[in-house]
Length: 341
Ligand code: DAH
Image (cartoon, rainbow, N blue to C red; front, top):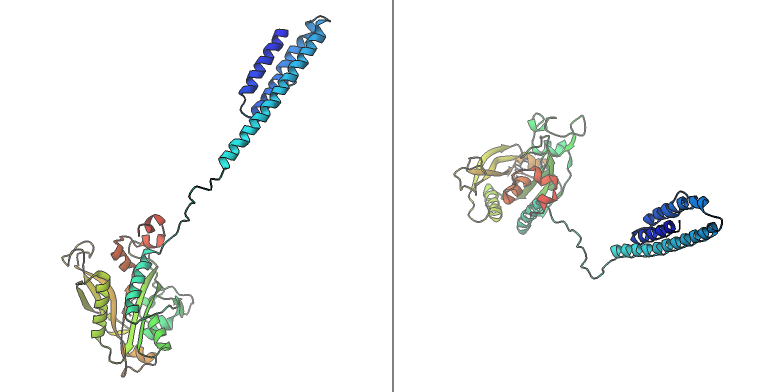
């Protein structure tokens, strides 16, 4: 029994020194000194001993128990200290390390293009206007000479708020022409960029929300020559000197005469390619001389004043400038896309 007790003492001592954490130590305490532990198992054999040997064995057992308890306590303290040290090390803050820079966003690529266009017009003395996206049918249609029966007024094309089709999400920035003329006296030179809404299905070239830029000039003696000269200048500033333009007759209810402005495809030089869909030309805006009915409806005498106006899609312009092939990328706000600009 003496040997067994010695062996227990040695085994326990070795195991305790190898224990790496407090849980393991508790496990060892139960294994060696617990009620069903190895010490108990040895002491069960006390019955076999003689009366003289028993107290000696008892004393030895107490001694071994005390020793093991002492070792456990010592190791527990050491392990706890090591654990604390490790924890502190892990959580230590090195104040000499360079800080993490906060991630700064930047302007959306489309708004870079818009800023560029605003700059061009501000340079020519235009005033930048902001206006309502929730609009009256009177401003979006009637005052722009767009009659009741016009297809763009259809419920399938326009988002209406009211059953009587009087309040809507503007389908174009042209109502800003009316707001400008109702609140200003000529000479008027305004640029009104903003969101517009149409019931279009989303695809690579369509979105129910997009941006237009409206321009309006009203003064004495304004002619189609002013329209052409100004827009040619703007095109050169955006697309570069020598860009070839074409003014093509068109129809808009609020201008007379009306036209569309094409630029010769900068990719193929007019021969026809995928960028211009084989046309050789790319349409960039609608324009015209403000209709006399529209002027007089805003209290401006068409016999004294004349004006020209244009409307341009911003997304298409940005897509051309940055070679973006899918309109959806502009609105998805995926930083992996936006960070390229
Ligand atoms: N509002 C027109 C559209 O959405 C674009 C437009 C054409 C605006 C001619 C104008 C203009 O100011 O004169 O298609």
